[in-house]
Amino acid sequence: MDKIMALIDSRDPDQDEFKQAVREVLSSVQPVLERNPHYRQAAILERMIEPERVIIFRVPWEDDTGQVRVNRGFRVEMNSALGPYKGGLRFHPSVNLGIMKFLAFEQVFKNSLTTLAMGGGKGGSDFNPKGKSDNEVMRFCQSFMMELQRHIGPDTDIPAGDIGVGAREIGYLFGMYKRLRNEFTGVLTGKSLSWGGSLVRPEATGYGNVYFASEMLATRGDSLAGKDCLISGSGNVAQYTAEKIIQLGGRVLTMSDSSGYVFDEEGISQEKLESVKELKNTRRGRIREYAEAWPGVVYTAVDTFKEYNPLWNHKAHCAMPCATQNEINARDAANLIANGVFLISEGANMPASPEAIDLFIDNKLLYAPGKAANAGGVAVSGLEMAQNSMRLKWPRDEVEGRLRHIMREIHRTCLEAAAAYGMAGNYMAGANIAAFVKTADAMLDQGVV
Ligand code: NDP
Ligand code: 2IT
Image 1: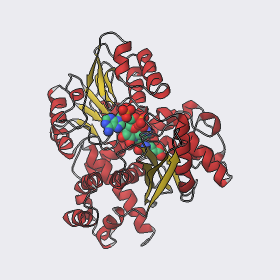
Image 2 (image 1 turned 120 degrees about the horizontal axis):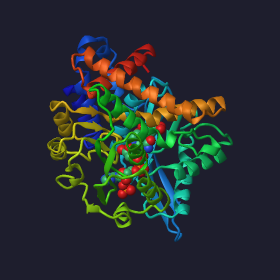
Image 3 (image 1 turned 90 degrees about the vertical axis):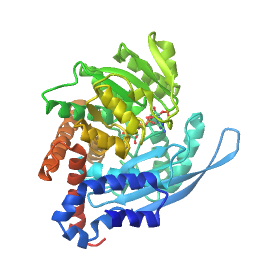
Image 4 (image 1 turned 180 degrees about the vertical axis):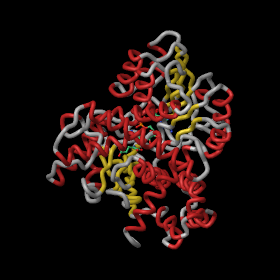
């Protein structure tokens, strides 16, 4: 482990998030490496931490005043042992190569857990869609795709959405790909329903997250009914995490954005959630407006990078972080535990710091890492690819049934792998071990490539 971390430090010393993601996996797979020395001989770890290909490109575009602007575009094609590269695109000002590599690395393991044939990749740009007009977003997406189209394809690399990339962006990206390549294929997922999208893809990450949480509760003979839940974020993953919790009889107390959070003691009902969807997806407003619209709701402004986040300091049973990486630090984790939270299910990628995770595991919480709990999104992306290849569309029940089944399988796989290595109940270790072994064995089968 020290050797691998030193290798990364010598080559990419400033990629903190990537190092964090790698360190977490390495800490879990140590016993696997001890039992399987042939992985070392084949330099499996050294190969896993080195992307198969990294593409970095200039994205020039013109804003509404006629001013030309320049952003940086990325696609990290991390590992194709299990299938074509698959993973989302993130448009956010914080995007850099280290963030892209952490997300691509996580994606390899997550995709391996889905039971479907997908390798891992991730891409995006430091472009900030906030405050941009639809036309500016369109011109940016078209310029981005002008370059990206050379590197992707329905059997090569299939991007999708992530932070800042939703149905609108996927539409503009798909339109430009189609025009440039003169082909109508499943090169992107998260497409709209009438032109190749799958039912349940918008809901999939959030619903899957809650299915995973329900599976964890079921191991203790419990369910989400009557549980108080803290959710961060108010985007795609947060909205459908909230929706499924409400359907299952739980109570959602909080939602947030990068400016602050709302606390609704009464609980966010389906009607109120519809207003959040309208606010965030159509009007692209701020969550503060939710507190102005509904009586009895308290809004608190939050500086994300302060010492702790008050959102995680309320009495509750469950917490579902659905915003971004490292949004729960050690102090937040201690607050959660002190407030009676005993289940954490990660809708976001790597939302908890290593110290926070240690606290969850040491205190025997039901803790589901993102690569297991939020795998439902990419899993239904895989089902969208399957439907596109068949030129067929499955009904809602078919897709939702498959999603449920996949989440149950991931849960079972995590528990079995953890138990096999003497770490019963440790979902993080189980997810990392099961995903690592499957990917590593495929790499061995395919030789030194
Ligand atoms: P959205 O863009 O739809 O929503 C993101 C939400 O998180 C917004 O409320 C946003 O607030 C908030 N947020 C983003 N960055 C920050 C930040 N730096 N600090 C505080 N809040 C922030 O993205 P998604 O819902 O799609 O993604 C949320 C998380 O889920 C990400 O970690 C993503 O990688 C992960 N994920 C997404 C999947 C998907 O299918 N979409 C699948 C699996 C994981 P604001 O509006 O103010 O920016
Ligand atoms: O992090 C993720 O799994 C996603 N953003 C979804 C990726 C996908 O290809 O659907």
